[in-house]
Image (cartoon, rainbow over all chains, first blue to last red; front, side):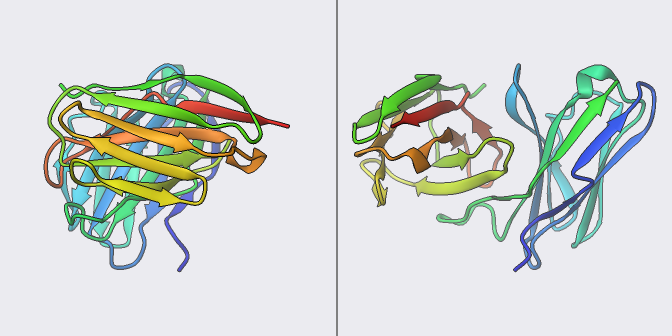
Length: 116
Length: 111
């Protein structure tokens, strides 16, 4: 099993540019989560999907952030326009059946975003 | 709003010693998780704790849950260098709801 796949692994961009982060969940997993990790705020959930439908987007910081899941094997997180304070590591995670007693979330390797 | 606090934030310990990391949370929870993160790496799930009094062990790590006290502990027995990492607890407030992560405890095991 390839695990959760994220691309790119590193992204450096300039303020004002559009950034798109990509995630491929583990095959068969119905839940997909996007997290952001920073030194100041720790690890925080941005949004999660169930069967491609957004369930909770209360963690999305502002309108500059958007996430989509067009099919079961692909999701994107877009920032437009990007700002230096968006610099962080963005993780994608997936779960087979979130809510089942012993289920867990499997994290991808993360995308380190630097906005200059 | 669910709050999750860990302490200590940083722990330096010698090989062979025992220590405990604490995780307190503010509201009733369905599940509590412990994750490990190596520097610059992703998060790896260690334990899922479901009910009051639950105890799980894997190697030198043992996690327990007291839902009445809203407290989980991660006990390290006879630490070895390979355990050096950051450990996070995470709490799920309701079934199939989001996880709220603690601040993390950075563990450094020295020779």
